[in-house]
Image 1 (cartoon, rainbow, N blue to C red):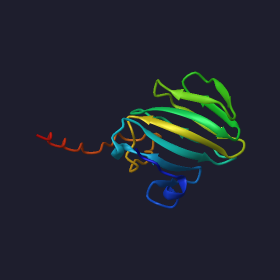
Image 2 (cartoon, helix red, strand yellow):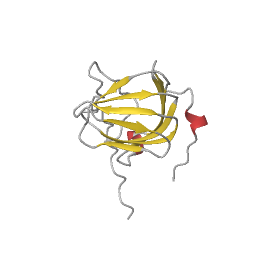
Image 3 (cartoon, rainbow, N blue to C red):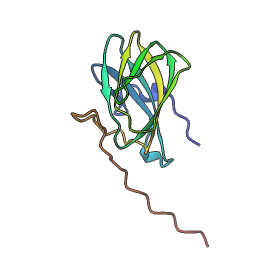
Length: 138
């Protein structure tokens, strides 16, 4: 069992900050569970372009309000606490928070924590080496 708090992550290498957002990576690829979990804050009045070409992301809004635009269709959806969006088709999108938005994000495959958005808004697919299985007890 793993129990971890946001306080343990704050201001460590797992606390990634940009001008538009802050992402506290709670569970990463090194945990070996097949997904990663982050608490992300998107700052009010910003606009962020993302395209996860190598990942599926689910985002659950816990506080704040704004909108997400699907750049493939032009559809704009309102975001508020209790909203969830799933980027199941590697959707190019923009997020525009009206207030600070706090959300919980789940990525598959999991991120390592070393990814940086490239010029296309994409996280490269970075993997962790797999651990050798323990020999069976005899």
